Length: 72
Length: 265
Image (tube, rainbow over all chains, first blue to last red):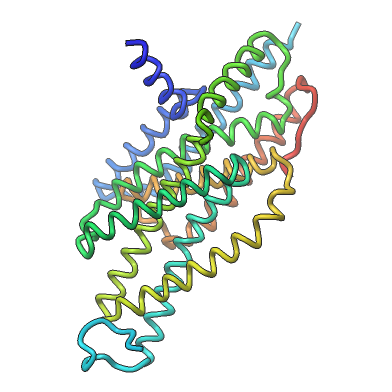
């Protein structure tokens, strides 16, 4: 049981890393793109736009937390 | 030497068509190999060459096994599903790298407090576990997948161009010439790249992985990129530019808390 748990933890750390929202966002973006593409919509812009937003949210949330910690 | 496919009596000499076939396969294969080489060089410089090159070897071996086992039936492999999986994984890895590189460049990564110290220690432990056994699983996996995916695309190019024009051997020679050219470029670039500062490399590598992940992931999800592979020439600089803008904004709006700010260029 301990082996299975550490095996699962290893893969979670390896793939997801320290911000699970990034991995979740990638899954959502690619799924939405697949759905739109199958419906005949030109969805090439969705992944780049979503990736830019995801990166900004992830980076600026760390900056905001850091700012809150540094304020008196 | 007969460079054509099929009975020797049907084989035309080196005609204009044969030259065009060679050039077309050479150029198309060069594009795919440059994509694979970019990823391997990026991983080799930042995570170590040993694991990256073992990944290349394993990727080529897997490719050889697949080609030998399937032969012309290779075209039945669902390439889009492979692109989706590899692209998704590269996106997650790339965004993780880019996020850390941006935070380091803005001076927000090396914060000295208990929470951050704990997080850094956990990260170090995780990296140590990943490197256990002398092989960096991360570097190996990224190299392996890049080589396998791009290698499959080169094989598809050779089979489709070659069989349509009756010249599998000539098409194969075009692909081999592309491999020699790209390998030469990698050997030339290896030394100068090792002198680039670490965080700058991680910043660029994160941008490259994110860009390739965006391109392949969306393609695997069914997208047709405007301009096909040329779209990468827009995606890569755009990703770099957006990331550099984030560093600039963070430097202006947040107090310096880390011991030093490290550059990205």
